[in-house]
Image (tube, helix red, strand yellow):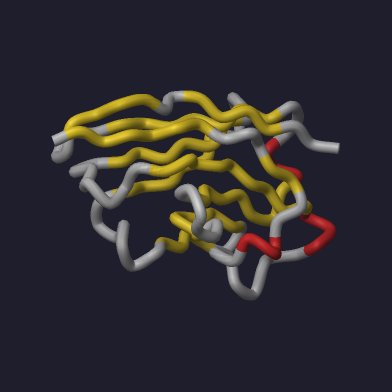
Amino acid sequence: QAQLVESGGGSVQAGTSLRLTCTTSGDTRKFACMAWFRQSPGLGRDGVASICTDGAYYADSVKGRFAISQDNAKNTLHLQMNTVKPEDPAMYYCAARGMSDGIAQFPLNHNNYAYWGQGTQVTVSG
């Protein structure tokens, strides 16, 4: 059973940057995909970015602004958020899909992930 813990959330001004980190309890190389999702109150959980053994995937709303990366030496997943916009605030969640489940056909669909963190809140001012 994998444990995921997010950190790095906070309040930032629009136009600036923020870096989220997801620390796992084990080896990140045992995951076929890892991803970041976000959810605002009353809305569904939307895929932001994912990184699978076959590459990285991004939601259209964050392409060119956000970058996902995985550090297998430190068992961490990162989301570099650049040029943060007023529509970016949400609870951001880290998720992982086991290697035995294979690469997700839809890497940004939350139904394809079995392991979840508790989330880290991002708010945007200005």
